[in-house]
Image 1 (spheres, rainbow, N blue to C red):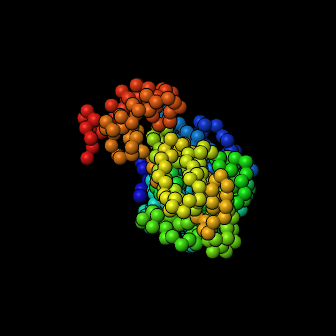
Image 2 (image 1 turned 90 degrees about the vertical axis):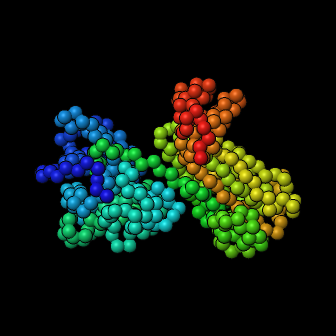
Image 3 (image 1 turned 60 degrees about the vertical axis):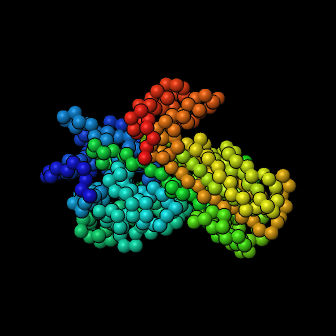
Length: 436
């Protein structure tokens, strides 16, 4: 895919080297031009993570001589000429690294799946779906390190002989976005154009299921169910966890697996701890701010459980260790508990009863959650704004607060009849006729 608005220009280029946290109005003479876009290199003092580099780049603008304001973002490279320009202009030392504006927006997937440029110019499998990439052999490798799995792009001179372009020493590698890198060799490039950083990402998949990507523990800790809790010391859940009941007998067609706390993965399904705790963290970035969020979950535990979203207790299965309720699957709507940014699903499960835990024959937790970012005014997430959504909003207006921010249609800080009037203007069909 050719980059948006390209003009062939000849120029002399000089890299700009600035400190981290530079001013929002970037100086024009500190940038260089290529094909109608402006570029600048930033060498952060003390290094910078990908997240820090992205935030700094996004906060910058540059004003052209004719008054046109271009928006900044981490550089996105969509052709070989642009690749050669960036590497030959800004990548000039052995082992030097440049953060690029590519990242894996859903990390619990294959190493090449679900990548995007921050501009949204490319999205999907980076190897198969992107029209252009310059990945090194074996990349993306998704190799874990002390900072986590690798889910952001860097361009890297990998200690080879010669300088780019043409030596293949300027290939792309995936790195961990929280890795600050060596301060003397890490930099990033800001690209200025009319696109800006505008890709709305959601690191939660449309369906979140129980499995080995959940964190697990058998020890309750203060604030364990909240967003701010550090679960990096927790083990990953044992899944699939042995059980006599097939998963699909409870949730037909699901990809969910039974899970429990068992760091050695040696249990036969009968010897795990009586009580276990689970966490799953993901990001929701609905843009603009007032897009509604939807979450519905199917839950089953042998025997009882508590389900938390962002530290709030949403549902408790406390019917005890009755044999007739062991296979009961609970459907829970947790839409009102979701928020823009980081979210955490947390589960406390007891093999027995929440009131008086007793070790029964098997332990298990089964989860299938549907998560979606909706359309403004589409409160039932059916891709249509009609009188059904108006009825939902009116019911919220009549009920006592607090109300979710997603019902504040006119963004005046209140949920009232004015929002209903605004919703009518958003009807998908005239006069709110039901959509097909």
